[in-house]
Length: 319
Image (cartoon, rainbow, N blue to C red; front, side):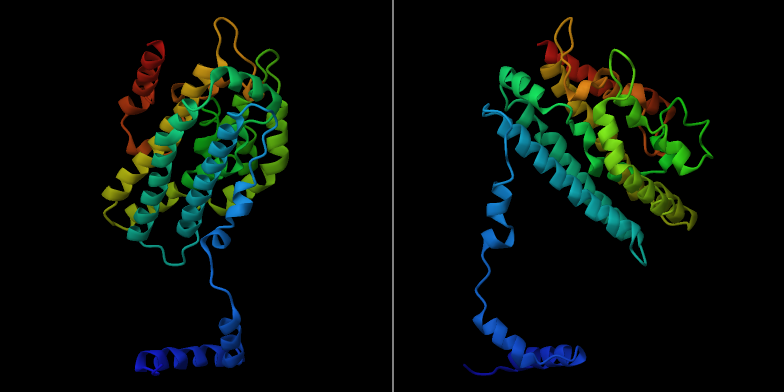
């Protein structure tokens, strides 16, 4: 084979690279000569991936439940990958920021539009049986989802609405004691913290607190105000942040609400799933008013937060 100028140029560049590292390029070429070609299944560790579904019961639909939650966590990991790129960028530009928010929005769009796969993909009777064997585990315990929230907004916006104003100038540790999701994991009967919550806090509290401190000046709200203060045109960024706000705080929790109403509510007795949490008050956005960017919404929009979505869901469920 003829040694073309293009190949020689690449070899020269490789030589420079390995010399700079004090390495012998010919040794690396020997390794390349004997290496096997990469396969798709090895690259994505397909065999390992497909071995990670281990149902706890004999009901076939439990595999659907497991796989969809695993897919969800992979989308959350993609979102956090973008969050880190934004927060840790040494010379963040507005265009880079917008492009990464668009990516996160596309991930959440995929999640919210695909939730029907799980909602409609399981037989109710199977679900009600196998779900009881999974207690106290709950999707409530998704640490990655909480990390996305922390990356997206000022930490005070995650404080329960009853304490938000009072703790506006409190420390992150003080605010964390009243973070909204702690109020969504109390026992229906006693009002005490569920085992679900206790497990979750024990595993992730230190991680959440450190991330909140790390993102104090690099969360999306802080960065939006930084670009706006510099006089840059943040119109497109504002639009993407509104989409993100609605995806995370309305469409995603209400997808779960729709599922919970379908599977976990019996009239007049509620099924004690999701670790016994008071999901009826925790999931609907109109109760919690979880809004990342209140400065991007009108008073009317915030007052009606999630209302039209809930009404449409309840109408569908009534059919």
